[in-house]
Length: 340
Image (cartoon, rainbow, N blue to C red):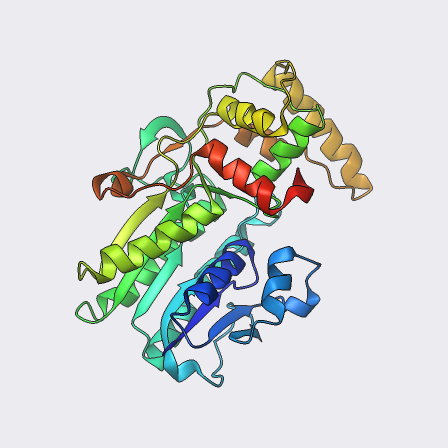
């Protein structure tokens, strides 16, 4: 049996993929390569499952630096590149490029060094930029953020790696929407807390579409892309969005969350400009004391902008979704009720 490596292996996507691969038993060893070692991370129920797994090996390293050799790297047959700086807000513009471009370059260079010819790269829908229009894989990419720009360039670095050996190499670039699920700590987690805590407000964005995908659906989809599409159909390259089709609206997210919580609270609508002004005041005041809060002006602005993205690849190739939005949230609550 060969080995697999996941860059960004102790992150949200990486740990779920590691658990999946360990259950499938397709690989002898699964290396989790990350700047933050598992022993240094705060308690996480997924990491706790991986700590004592006999086939999981943690390697501490930074993708901004050349990847060093380690025992077992000569038998790696597949690379999952999930390493990235991605939180918005949270970083300076240059930091997204510094980490994401260097990571793509170092990982693809190292792939050639060890003779690995199979890479799955997790990009993002951010390269599409902001627009209310429906978009898919054929749409023009016009990044509106440093993160989106860095991901678009990183995609091209991976394509350049592929072009050096089209006969043997294989590449999947997957562009997920908002990834949500147990312990993700991102936008949907904050939305659940806001709805549960009765401090969520509409701001004219009830019908704003937010392309997203449940983490377990994403894992299933990525492996379907690899095993059923790339390998079975003898392809060498796939670019595919990873989203529910269509992406739910903010109102649909809220209604589904309320249904899982078994409540039906009336949610008021607040003018966007008023809420944005309040968030700027909070940012200025709380920033002085270095106090974190969920009302960042950047996040407020994102809530009213649609990510109206679909996966035409999934539709055209008859991918069978496992979860709709309500099923996904229900499964999340079953797996990690502490967050609900």
